[in-house]
Length: 490
Image 1 (cartoon, rainbow, N blue to C red):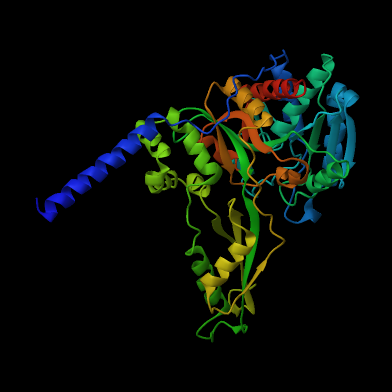
Image 2 (image 1 turned 90 degrees about the horizontal axis):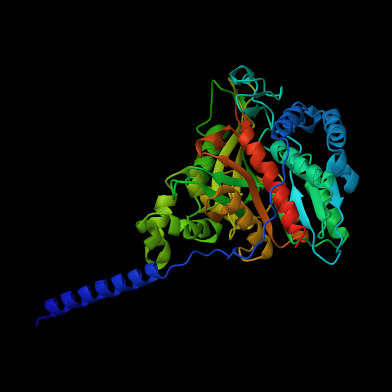
């Protein structure tokens, strides 16, 4: 046999060997999730869902809007919301100690009977984003009227995040009224400025740290039950085990001002444009690792044979998994640090050359990357262009990745699966939440809201016609009641 024949046989042998490895790994593949079979979940208690929906509508009417310029905020609206909470949920306030920090952030403590047990920390923020000026007429119902109609509560904050705040209080008030006494201390943290600064949550975390608090777990807003997940085409409960860091880079191009009728060959605006394009065209590579990869691996048993095979053999198919995941912006965002130019400033008049031009570029930093790497990459991208790079404010680094084998995860995953009747998977939260400040008081921080939304429906959050179905209000109250009763009794 000639060398060509031997080479062909060798190639065939390699293909067969690879095929055998792929087949064995696929057949023996197990999703990387903890066994939750031993978790004993509390039963659901009866409650008035229509009343809960009306209460949420009332909460929406308080215009606790966090503006980019704090001078535009209306502090009296937070005072009114606080008074409403106390009047609406008297039993919760009877059993919980209430503290106000950093102006309007709230910290509630429901002491457990066993102080040796680590507490659980539940979070929901009070503030909402502004309504886009001029868009009010496009809303089905006025954004701050809190209308309950057509099986939903309508208005800014109905989901983000007064939906969580109100349903948490509904659950806690119901438990207190029923005489429930927690074994494990329950702490509720409600920041007042999550949408702009998070100073309230930062102050609350500092307060808890000063008391030596080390929580069993923290639960904040974040992922949901996606009813049409792209991988399974069916409902999936996603619990974020980490969130990206947050940083905004300013790129400034100094220039000589003057009259636009006699421009120099290179203006500040053209220099800035080149710098922004250079940075945007130098993206971070996508990696099949971290919570984004864990999500796909966890969902593989519930997906197609091709996805199962690829997830079981990432040593061979990770490029395929990356390309498939990156077909949507949301999927791509789970696999790398994103770069988003968002704001520009140049001349105040159309016929005046600016003395400097500035762009703001927002980064969401993936676990495994750092703000220092982001700055270095931007500097490398602009090269010798005459621009200045600086942070708009100190960056928030990515959170650590929380455990998917801890008792806290097992409780949350068991309950999320029981409530949704859907697979549960870890995920990466690509936005930011107040929970990023809780690292000093908890090793395990999870981000999940127990409501069911389609991929398309998530677009209304921070957008026009934000609303939450009454069915989702019911799901959330029931979930939080069962969660507190389960976790605080163990």
